[in-house]
Amino acid sequence: MIEITGTIINYYFHCKRQCWLFANKINLEDNSELVKIGKEIHKNELESQNNSEISINNVKVDKITKTHLIEIKKSDADFQAARWQLIYYLSKLEEVGIKRKGKLIFKEKNKLDRKVHEVQFTNDLRIELQGIIKDVRELIESEKPDEPTKTSKCKKCAYYEFCIC
Ligand code: SF4
Image 1 (cartoon, protein in one colour):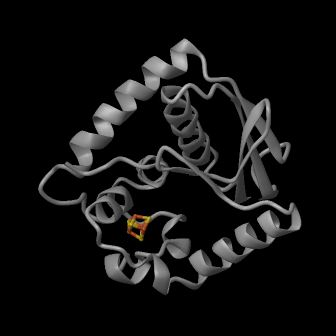
Image 2: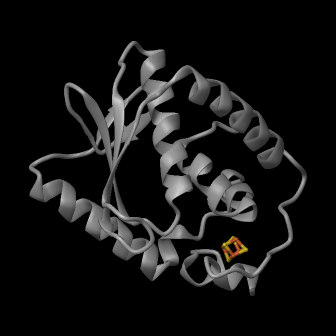
């Protein structure tokens, strides 16, 4: 059975085909310049905060304070993808008895009105997340991915050449 991760949840919102390809280990991420740039920004941000990624119960999070789990993203281009990834992490931490609010910090603010967003892991979100996980599992365990659909997201995607959109 494929293990669901925060990245898989993120890609489910970003692009269903990307989600399937990544979950099924067709991984072109390392070849993408944009992905490399994103990872560098992420690394520098963590170093400037004298912090490093923390791994709890197979969940890699950027930072944990007494009140928040903090995730840092390059841009707010896909807010819902980042938000549900964070919600997924909050649920995984809760499973091991760590309850926190979520905080998303975007280095670049393009679409939204602010760079910092808070998430409270409520019961409604918990129920919604369960439905999403069920849908994600159905998608990634299907025989083949959706056909590529060209959108503005494709140009920045690691699978761009593979999809030939
Ligand atoms: S290139 Fe476009 S269609 Fe292909 S995986 Fe990326 S976002 Fe999806």
